[in-house]
Image 1 (cartoon, rainbow, N blue to C red):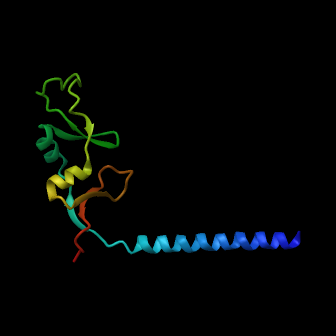
Image 2: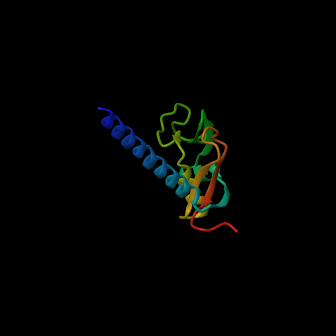
Length: 123
């Protein structure tokens, strides 16, 4: 019985060692991620204007395209093409081109969105 306990302890220790090695390898791979070039802020009003003739508005913690006052159904909220969450990636692509993507410095703060290009190494 004592031998079986030792084998179990050795097996468990081996599994912990393998898991820690994999975790270190994953962390190193994540740290080696090449930096992205900051393209700048996202012009959400321009995105909404081009997309549907509206403007951008922060509602709660989400940016939405809202209808201009004169749009049919705007006052009653009937027009469903408005008041949908803005795709930050789409807004970046519209503004900076196909290689642009959106990143947030703080996911809890809707004002920290930026456009980046990860295909170009920053200078």
